[in-house]
Picture (cartoon, rainbow, N blue to C red):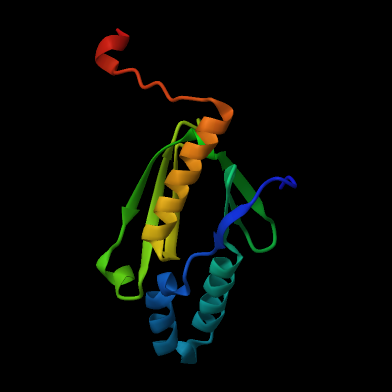
Length: 146
């Protein structure tokens, strides 16, 4: 991260995404193995990080070996908010980013708190970044491409 890069939002998916696993593992705790599986899922979710800056979105996953993927904000074409009922019960939502990035055309920030506000922040930051870089997206319809 460069010195001029400002963090807009940072977080990880909520442990609520593992609620079903925790319940099943809690019911089967006497088998011992489910306890280790639940602990692994907790650690995996805790190790998954999202960082949204005014220049890019970074996603880091992995417990022992880490993988980091980043998408430049000027490549974000659309930001969609999904609020499934189960997540809405916990004031969580999914923010789906559709981008022009060839490696990651779709990035979903899963089970994040205050997802509507995050969506707006990403939209505003993406527009500001496009203005700064003087970049515009050009969509060519398949009908006209032939």
